[in-house]
Image (tube, rainbow, N blue to C red; front, side):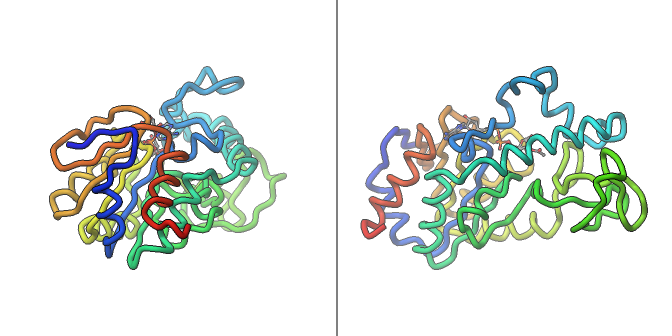
Length: 250
Ligand code: OAD
């Protein structure tokens, strides 16, 4: 196991020659854009709530207004923030690698705004809204119909198009994520605590399929084993450094 706060030379060689790279990202990648990670204590108005208590179908049934407003707050935070150097470094990586796939648990749309093209959204996207009953994406609705607003098709509550605790992941997105994980020669897990399944098992799957694996996090994460590069530090510093040293033209 390599554990380091700087980029190992061996990793630069592996990345430079990789034909297929898959990257899994979590809330840590957006931390330097000013968005609180999922397990950070919420501040201000929302400090009395744990995300785990608000991001469930049961919470939405019990208190639909509260859940809708919490997501409206998160949506406005995301809209006011900007992609950071970690997001931009992943765009540059995509441009240099023949086959690149970004699998994200983030719902803030910052990878897409930075310019990443091949993005699999495992947990949905805050910017989309669906009908809570028919699950179709709704583009336009009348905000005057209430909080949450009513679906213009059937009158049910609208909800954010994100995956809540206890819900299954979008099947196609998950299948694509597994395929990209088991068909890459280099796999990165970046800024994710690695505690939420099934995304947490992707690094192990990648290693079993023969890929080199990099875990990049501020903290030590649960997935520690031989043959893994562990990089400790902020993604917004380490990723641009890695990209610059791998492809000095960037
Ligand atoms: P977490 O909040 O669980 O973990 C964020 C991770 O990022 C932590 O391990 C931090 O140490 C690390 N981190 C923080 N700042 C960082 C930085 N600047 N650079 C690198 N790492 C940093 O968020 P996720 O792992 O994304 O699911 O959580 C996964 C899922 O659990 C979320 O999508 C959400 C949540 O429950 C659902 O809503 C279904």
